[in-house]
Length: 71
Image 1 (cartoon, rainbow, N blue to C red):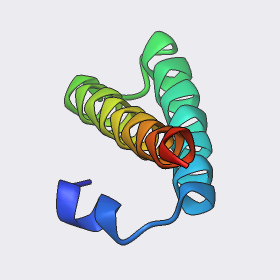
Image 2: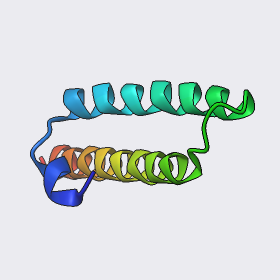
Image 3: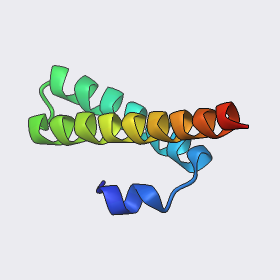
């Protein structure tokens, strides 16, 4: 998930995406522990996507706080 895709999402959609990533991560790690898949690259990508989502959510939260603090 790239930055330009994130800018088009509202915070509620980002929370949904975050939940989906966490669910996929759990399932993939479970399959890896069972030896069914070798998804190390996918796990890394999901971890980075999760970090991007959390960073973008936090920046929006801080901007909203700055706007409220300025009033």
